Length: 109
Image 1: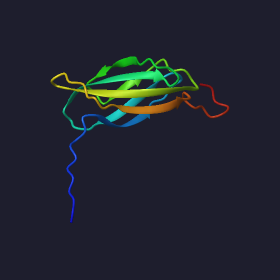
Image 2 (image 1 turned 90 degrees about the vertical axis):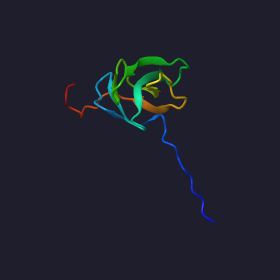
Image 3 (image 1 turned 120 degrees about the vertical axis):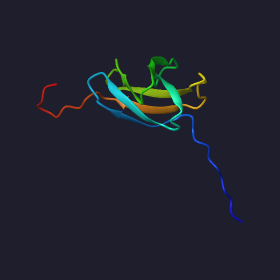
């Protein structure tokens, strides 16, 4: 007996990654899971808090996250919205400890 399972494409963004880290900011990147998304809604919160703060909305698959405090743990999340204006119930999240840009000893920032 063999079982076959069809998996529908996800309506969420995939594979959150971080680039371009500075002293108080980073760029959050992701891949579109379906290529049918109209826009992305991105939010952040300090891991110790319950309140989510809007970062912004974009049609691109990246966004600049600013005003981060060093040595603070953050959770970032990305919602997707399709052309009909329906926001996904699923969300892609990333938990991180922000350390800022790391400078080798002896070099000035």
